[in-house]
Length: 104
Figure (tube, rainbow, N blue to C red):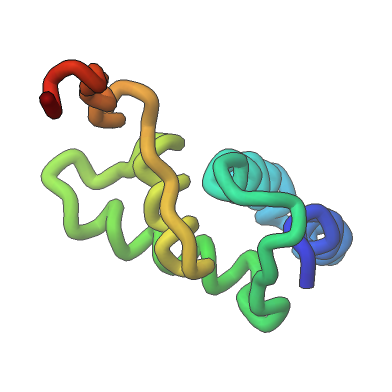
């Protein structure tokens, strides 16, 4: 399933999620952040639903000393679950510029 179709699927699934609807909207936002660095043609396993994504975030929160997970850490966890990567702007390595003259 393509990236945008997957987000639409999560939004439709959220309509029937009951009491956790507001919480799952935040999970969907984090999922969109996680997939923001992928192409629109990126394929995602449609069997990974909101409950599974939330479980990964919840487990990471329980293991941390703060007992919570921020939105960007959640995006990194979700990206890993979906088979891609998300790199925060503050953690990107600067590309070293090499001049052609340096090789001679």
